[in-house]
Amino acid sequence: MTKIKIEYDYDNCIGAAVCVAVAPDTWELDDNSKAILNNAKDLGNGQFELILDIDDPTRLTDEIEAAKGCPVTVIKVTNLDTGERLV
Image 1 (cartoon, helix red, strand yellow):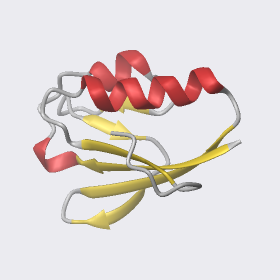
Image 2: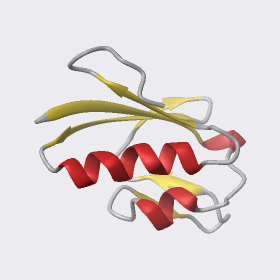
Image 3: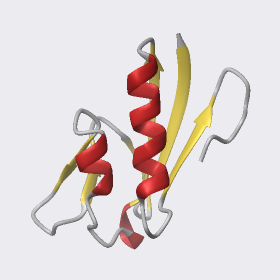
Image 4: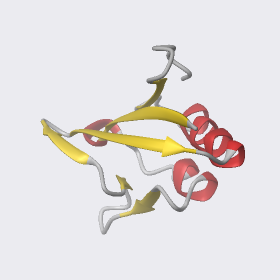
């Protein structure tokens, strides 16, 4: 099992929806056509954070690809077990 942290900057999202297409269990679009990080903690100022325990390697890959596919790089993924920034 891998524990990751996803950090997301809603205010700078442009609604490209790559994250939604790649990881639909984690992401969806709101009425403004911006991504929503499901079940995330609202840190204020448009910043959100979600901690996930992932035991499926495919899901881990999806979360990484969702972040990599963001054209404005508003998604960051960190492996909390190692401290390594994955994206």
